[in-house]
Structure formats: C-alpha cells, structure tokens
Figure 1 (cartoon, rainbow, N blue to C red):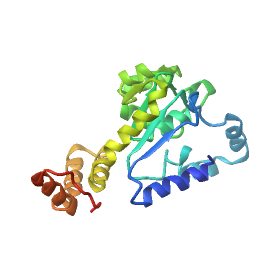
Figure 2: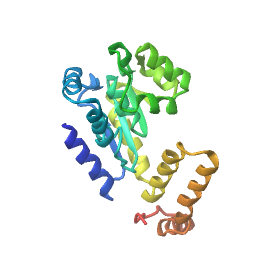
Figure 3: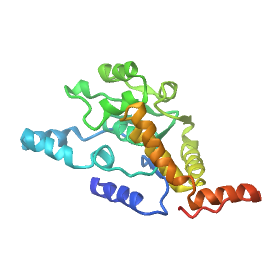
Figure 4: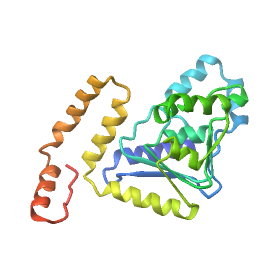
Length: 236
C-alpha cells in the first residue's frame, strides 16, 4: 500500500471505537519489509535542500505511517515473516508487540550505506533490547535470526511460518477480550512512562488508573465476578 493509504488506515484504527487491535504483516512469507527504496531516497536528497528535508521528516508520520508524528493509542502487533531490515525493522519497532516466523531476519544495515537509521531505529531499539546489543546491531550492520531476536527481547514469540498468522490472531483476540479503556490506559502508561522519570511515571499511572476504578466496565467486571458469568463490556 502507499504511504497515504497506510496513514489513512492508522487514523481509522485510532478513531473508530470498534477497532481495538491492529495487526501489521507482510504480503507473503518472504518479507515483512526490506526497508526504503534507496534509489528514490537518493533522488529526494539530491532534489531537496537540507532544511527542507528535515522539515519534511519532522512533519510526516514516517515509514508505514507510524514511525513518527502519529500516535494510534491502541495495541499494534507486528507479525514478521521473512526479511525485516532497515526501515522495515524500524516499522516493527514502532509496533507494541512483535511476533516472528522462524525464517525471519532482523537488522539495521544503514551504516553500510554511510548513513544511520532515521525512522526511530537508534532510539527505539535500545529502549527494547539492552543498549549494548542495540549498538552491536547498529555498528556492525549484521542481521540476526528470529531465535536470537527472541532471546534478546526484540520479539515476543517465534512460530513456524504457517502458524505465525493464526498465533497472531490468538494474541489479538486475547487482548480484545478485555475492556478497551483499560487496555488503552495500560498501553499509554507504558508508552508515555518510558519517557519519564520514575516519580513522574508513577504520577502518570495514577492519573490513568483513577478514572477506571469506578467506571461502568469496572462495575461490570465486579458484577460478573460475583454472578459467575462472562462480563459484557460497553467500552466505558
């Protein structure tokens, strides 16, 4: 899909209450995303002055519509099948959860091209894996396999290729089973809290937790527990 199509899709996920979890995956088993078109990127850099380039990068939502300047506010799961390099990995890093097939490979090869990642790779990767491991991936430009990615915490789970999408669906359904306001508040607490000091993060946690403590869905959860029945969430 085009960049504009992806931005529109993410805005729809953000704005429509019935859309509770998003899944991002590649079109086939060979690649999730191999990164940006280096030829087109070179043409852009040759044609636009430096100030204009920075202005454009700081304004647009970035690769895949979510690497910068667009906050969806709902869980996004990346189902990574095959090659996931450069901008493709940066796109996966912008998701909240990452599942991989056993044939997946991950890497940030930008230094080979005399550049560095520019869509969040240098910032998100060391927030997800230990900084020294992130630096090794960045400085050597060497890709890693799915098993290694799971061992360092880059992906949550690894599955055979034919099980990746079914298992991703199971994970998405397990999230959708819970009240949406609580899911979104937990996501916001973690995402926003990572940029704060611990005292600031604890204050944020209370700001997000307090409105939920006697919400209609919280009352429904307590009633369902007492009555030994499944809860019926209304999203409030």
